[in-house]
Amino acid sequence: MTNTDRIALMVALSLALSARAYAGDTQRVSEPRGVGEPRGVGEPRGVGELSTSTVLASGLMPATGFGPSVAATLRWLDVSMSVEARVLWALGSDPSGAPPLAPVSRVCVGLLSLCRHRDGVFVCNFLQSGVANAELAGDLKPVDDGNLPWILTSGVRGGADWRLWRTVELRSFLELHVVLARPHLKVGPVQRWQASYVAAVAGIGVAFRVTPE
Image (cartoon, rainbow, N blue to C red; front, side):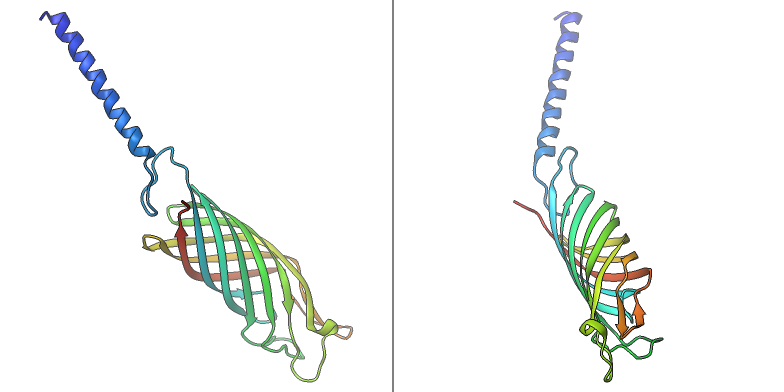
C-alpha cells in the first residue's frame, strides 16, 4: 500500500468515526429526560406545577392579613405562567381607626403572573383582582352591609426555589403591589378605612412538578 493510499484510508476512517459520534450525540439529546435531570440542547418541553403557600399581607386590609394560596403553573424552559387563588383573613382590627374593624375582615383574590426563572431564582410580573369584605365591631353598621369595592393590584415578585426531592421544591417569595383600585369602608357618610396605595406580600410554600405525558 502506497503512502497516498494510507492517507486516504486514515481520512476515511476519521470521517466515519466522527459521523458515528455525531449520530450518537444527536440520539442522546433527543431522548426524553426525567424531572430534575439537566435539559439537553434543543429539547424544549413544558412542565406543569401545582403549588400551595402560606402568605402574609400588609396594606391590602385594615390589619395584617394571613391565609392560604394555591396555584397552577405551566413552565416552558425558563418562562412560566401561573394562575393563583388566595384568601386572606385579618389577624386583628384596625390599629388606628375608630370604630375598630372586627377580625373577620377578609380578602378573596385571583392572581395571574408571568415569570422568568434562572438557577432557582425567579422574577415575576403579576395582576391581582378580587373582593374585600369586613364587619364592624359593636352595634355600628357599615354602608352596603360591609361589602367593600373590588381590589385591583399590579406589581413584581421575586423569590427562590430549593429542591427537596426529585419533583418537590420549597419556594419562598416577596411581592410588592401597587394598589390600583383601593377598597374602603364607610359608616354613614364617614370613611373609616381605605386600602394603602402600596402593599407587600410574603409567602412560603411547596411546589410539586408534574411532567405531561
